[in-house]
Image (cartoon, rainbow, N blue to C red):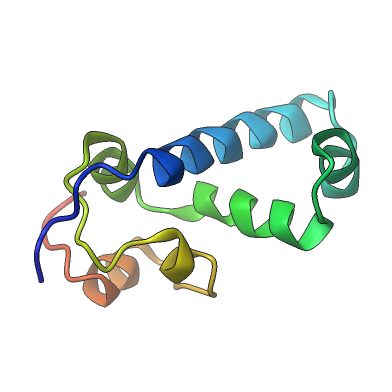
Length: 98
């Protein structure tokens, strides 16, 4: 399993997910539906993007730095994945981290 070049689309989606989470937590966006309407996207897509906020911090950094395994793509991350960080690392062959 090799490293993928930095995936700018995936990095932007991670950043967008964290921005949307801040909007929800602050009350600036009342719901995922409101975000979807504002962004002119499907609610289920918005929910999938928001799931990226559940990624382990070291996995997020690897995505942003372009050090993530080549199997870690939006296609992979748009599917259900483990919430436990240790399980995420195991699933995608990433060792170490906190």
